[in-house]
Image (cartoon, rainbow, N blue to C red; front, side, top):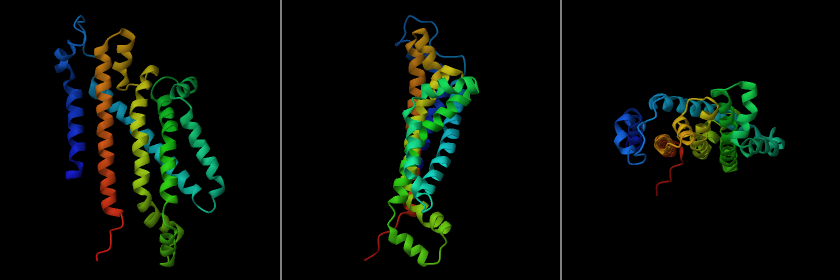
Length: 248
């Protein structure tokens, strides 16, 4: 429970700050003392936070499923010939700027959440795929041989041996991907998606620094909360699946 405490506290602060943003209006008067309208009020911050988080979670789930499956396929004997191709396809997704992906996706998918979801999935594939390959390739071959010697099928070796041992490295890739996409999701507000980028875009358009700060603070706090959550998850995974040193 102690491992999860920082994540829980950060999540509570994030939700509390999102709900109490109007109460903090006097603080933003120091930033923009000449403006009467200081708190972004077109949408509630809790709604924007929920929508922003939903986009990131959905894109992370799709990206993780595709990248981990691709990594598993490329490390099997039948798929090793496709390893360079799999890596190149994932790399192409990240070399395309998210703005370019949006420009290509909007004419096909229209405005709203769909184009930014496509951009987030493509942008998040590479870190997860690289870590999946590194985690599976880094397992000692003797461990696989021992598992096969115990009568395990290839699927059992993958599920019961390889994925638990590589899970820590794979989680680190998902952590990197999600943290990047929390910031990237904010640009979805330029094409009609409801995210925490709304106050940032509105502030830039209207020259209102207070709006920009409100969005930036919440996005940064969301990134910190998510990073802390993954850190706790990685530590829990280590305790459960890492080999324990032999007692002397």
